[in-house]
Length: 344
Image 1 (spheres, rainbow, N blue to C red):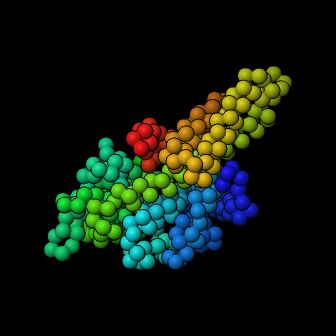
Image 2 (spheres, rainbow, N blue to C red):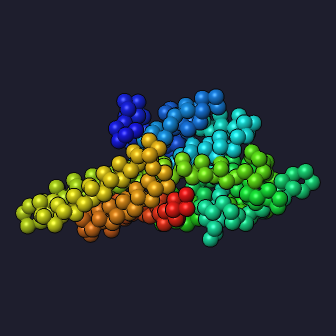
Image 3 (cartoon, rainbow, N blue to C red):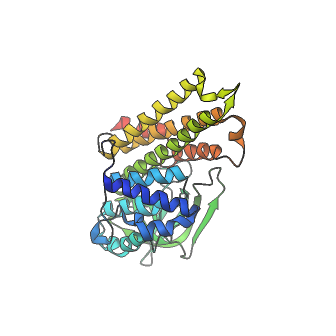
């Protein structure tokens, strides 16, 4: 991407922005998937998708961040396809990916657990073979969406962490919406009680599949953060031009100029790091850590520079702040990613 979008990427961004402006909240998913095809961007053509690269995923992620959209793009179009493709299970891919690509089905990756979060090794959810069927029991946290199909990480007695497909409406499956501060990013808890699952890939082979999912998901969350930070900065800049104090725009005061300059510098640094991650020059985890921290700081500055109006329910400033903090913790905190990168 090298910091500059191709003509096709600019057209994709414009189309996504137009749909998000016309359709509020989760209602945008159907036209995004059906009219633009964002659900199949990361899915190869042989499975009904477009085989697009990280640049296109980043474009969509950035637009979703600008709109604070709650659509299930991260889970159904990024995390699950990445994990399935990396698993090497062509039979499962052929059965599920075409439906995900067309948007007729959604899927969620059930990975994180209380305390363990995105640690692959310390999974407590178990899978055991009982009378010829795999039965899963355990609790998963932080699902960004409640998909029709669940891709669950569970440990097996002799093979270690493995992947299993579980229908969301299967017996023994309970999905519960969790109260969250950030209403633009819903979260769900999954409880499994001897629910039947189908193995995906080799037993014990979850780690590389999850690593692929994490890399793709971290990139999209970095882009989401850049999108949210962009609109927070742009809105704040315009406000400082319009809001007058002592007969002049507040943006003309030196102290405010300095804060705006710092916000712009932080945003451009995040944008550059995102471009480097798209080009494969830096790990996506590093980009996520830095971009999310930039978004958190810019959202805080936006509230300060807007003054009292920013803490009213009607103003979007509090929503930028909440989105920034939820993105920073989803798929691993900044410190978690940095610790992992230090071990590589």
